[in-house]
Amino acid sequence: MIALLVAVVGTLGTQPPVTAMFCRNAATTIDMNDCLAAEVAKATTVLDHYRKAARARIAADTATSTSVLPAFDAADAQWRRFAEANCSAVYTLWEGGTIRGAVAATCQIRLVRLRTHELWGEWLTNMDSTPPVLPEPVVETGL
Image (cartoon, rainbow, N blue to C red; front, side, top):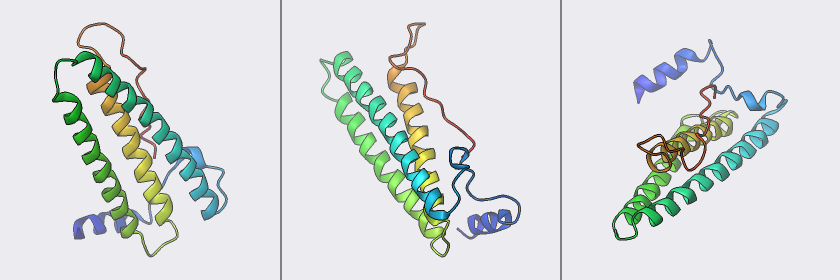
C-alpha cells in the first residue's frame, strides 16, 4: 500500500490522475462528475447487453449441462463484488480531495469496459472463423 501511495504521489506533479477523453469540456468538478456518471451508465448498459448475450448463448449451447450457467453467474457476481470493492478503495485513497468521485468513476468505467471485453472474448466468440455473437467492444486505454 505504501508503494502504491508513493507511486501515486510521485506522479501528482507530472500528469493528472484522471484523463477522461470524453469529458474534456467539463468546466467544474460537478460537470466532470456528471459527465463521468453518464459514461459509467453507458458502459454499464453495454456490459449488461453483453452479459445477457453470454447468458443466452450459454443456455442455448449447454442445454444438457446444469453447471455452466450457475458457474458463469457465480463468477459474474464475484466480479461485481470485486469491481465495487476495488473502486471503493480507489475512492477511499482520494477521500481528501474533490477529485475522488472522478477517480472512482474512471475506475468503474475502466473495469466495466474490461469486463465487457472479457465476456466477449470468453463467451461470445468462436474457436473457428465463425463471426462472434456480438462485435468486439472497444476498450479505450486513455482513461
